[in-house]
Image (tube, rainbow, N blue to C red; front, top):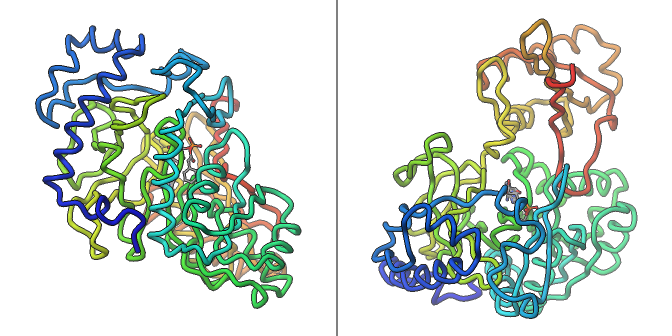
Length: 431
Ligand code: DLL
């Protein structure tokens, strides 16, 4: 199913022609912003130097720090009177990253998220329960307007209050759940415990805003009896709608008529050949309020340009493996939390809720994986407990190449998250 079939299945040659035309315009728009003007001058490059898509490489990168340094509105390329909406991404410390939209930007944004929702099977017959937090976060509003545009019935539930979420999911007959995978998992477990899964009409999960291992997704799908797709985005780029899976779930189609994707080596900044894994860099082609040129997303993925079985021609990015900045370096070894999750999801007797604690002990890093047991009684059966601990440690060693301490804890003692999960506690600077 397509929301904008002609564009979504456009032959690559036509798509690239469109991208080139739009790229020239986007770079021109960006050069109205003092930060970009300065960057371009320093690099000795002007918008007129763009003759082919390959010329994009000559432009300097844009970083999250550029947004911070120009807080709150210094990255806007249009006067404030043309800005109709402001959002911001939740920085855990300091000032948030502020973004803005013109009327056209909002319209384009809704179209792109609608593509993702329709690709997952959403129609005007659906009741869409949005359990993302409404507010400065882009997730809720992004999914809200897109699903309205499709003609679905939108329930702007917001996050929190799990009991009420379940009551309304049931009473309003929601068929689509929009949430972070972590919160969807929690909701599904509580629904199971309460024995109300059979009373729900859910069919589709639209999950995004954070990564989710295949094992965790399967668990949510099993608990709820749904099919879930993954969608990706980031406030600086637009919010959700940058890319999303189709029903074949073999990569997330990037809306290439509005964005150009590159993969670079995060250490050298060099563009990597198609198929190689590295950091995703995105250039916006149509954004009016906030053009971004070669934005360093920090997200690690790879690109696949083969036409998908669904007929979409737009490039597919692999599920995000992690952010370059949430990669832990433990005893010199690069460890992504997603790798640990991948291992834990395939082990019996433990719940999918976990935390990672990193410390520095005797001048050496140590990783503790805190995992919740499903059955409290196991805590009294020392031999079995020991065997389980050893199994987890051995499996993690095979995948990560390092030894981790395993702490098994009682059911329901690991924190549950209602938005994006924060599973890593890095105490190395604090010890
Ligand atoms: O999370 C936008 C969004 C909302 C996307 C709802 C999808 C659904 P930010 O709060 O700015 O924006 O966070 C962006 O979240 O750089 C990734 O590291 C991570 N992220 C977002 N979607 C995914 C995903 C929104 N599907 C940051 N898989 C990004 C993995 C994701 N990571």
